[in-house]
Image (cartoon, rainbow, N blue to C red):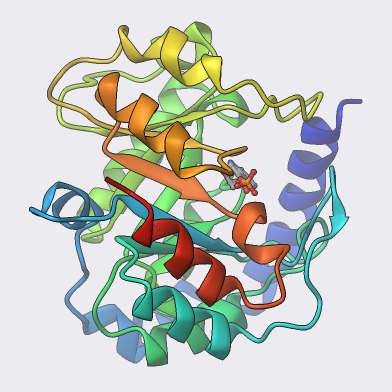
Length: 262
Ligand SMILES: O=P(O)(O)OC[C@@H](O)[C@@H](O)c1c[nH]c2ccccc12
């Protein structure tokens, strides 16, 4: 079993348990269900947008502990002060040390920029949950889902007023997404099975994505110069976690990074 298969299998069991305890009705009654969501697309395309989606990431299967001292409140305030285009928050507990409570806490502070729920979505229930905890955007990882699931979960998110970031790593992943036009596509530079990072991956696949899409490059970005290069290939969004989180003050590191962007 690859690590990704392990994560997916674990998720499915976990969700079955949660579904037995929490009703959809209860989720729909949450105050966040009525809020107006912030558009990631809009935030990335705004004139003067930094394009940076900064991620709160305590740990990962590939790196182990990245940061176990910074608080969600400090980091959220820091990222907002740095003028990020959006925040990404890992809500997976077992592999990434995050939680839904982290996202809810960030939402209370962040009343201005979109929040991406970063998790492995394998069930529609998690999309309703995302709305209930105050997320604006969900992640659908193409390699974890079938073409039909991608379509159905994408539709469910849109019906709930959420945006979708479709994550791909290969051409095969991209081919699974129907009606590509106007979608938000993230190219992950990290292979989720081997954890190998290759920034060229974004560049290789960029051409295959229609102009009408918003293109995001994800993972392994550690230098503002990389952003300049990726912009040449039409990228408008850049997802960065570790590079900020591994420092003592992720908000400050993010601010320093953004101040160096041209
Ligand atoms: O920490 P990095 O290398 O800057 O990467 C951030 C983000 O792209 C990465 O955490 C990520 C991309 N896709 C994912 C899917 C699940 C969990 C995590 C991820």
